[in-house]
Amino acid sequence: MNSKRLEPPMIIAEIGCNHKGDLEIAKEMIITAKIFCRADAVKFQKRSVKETLSPEEYNAPHPNPYNSYGSTYGEHREFLEFSLDQHQELKKLCDEQGIIYSCSVWDLTSAQEIASLNPPFIKIPSALSDNFEVLGWLCANYAGDIHISTGMTTKQEIRDIVDYFIEHKRNHNLVVYHCTSGYPIEFKDACLFEIVRLKKEYGDKVKAIGFSGHHNGIAIDIAAYTLGASIIERHYTLNRTWKGTDHAASLEPDGLRRLKRNLMAAYESLQFKEVDLLEVEKPQRSKLRWNRNQ
Image (cartoon, rainbow, N blue to C red; front, side):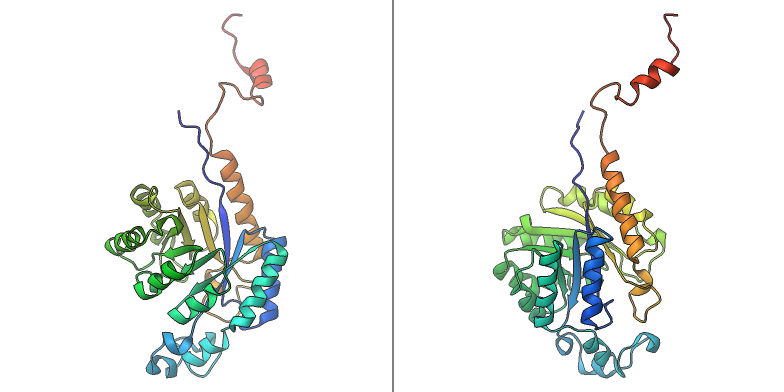
């Protein structure tokens, strides 16, 4: 019998752009994630907006004007961006609070800037999962772990990504996340058995398998962990009614706190019996069990 325990769950609070472009809100979210929610890491996002958007996309209106922080989609994205100095300030606060700082990067310039801060890991969003210009630069110039989400990514594209990291001898730093790209998604679209497939195909080739959820509630996260995703990432906000695209698919602090509590309960429970009778069972056996010798 294999008595090996699962890895303890790592919980990443994805702040993203849910700070509304306000550095003080971002700092409050870090402290809350650490002290109240007991998350292991927080993660932001970094874009060079004019590098990621074409002029037409930049000057187009936001597809949902209610969620926009600018008169165009580009202005909206610029409003939500922090400078590199501000990211450095946020990382410093994370270091002081004892919580991991990380960031998703959406283009090569952002990857180079965030890598200069030397966080323990950098995240590649699903939109860039097979952008080998960014992946290649990180493999060659950044020594930390590289986490990649695989929403809207085909099975063959995932194979190509893992093979690329193996070829560049960086697969030991690669974390592959199962993800469904939608905000929020229905439960049926979580497709959690993909975690089992990723674990079977790549579990011995990469550092870990993760799960990035865009659903409501926390039940699915517990199932994802049980199926083999040792890293759980959820969008996190202080108020789900705030203006912005991601708040509706985010957990508020109490939800994130309960996620941590329930994941740790799952971790404690997922083990084999090492003896026939546990200590807690012995008095119950003596009191309740039928004794065939009497």
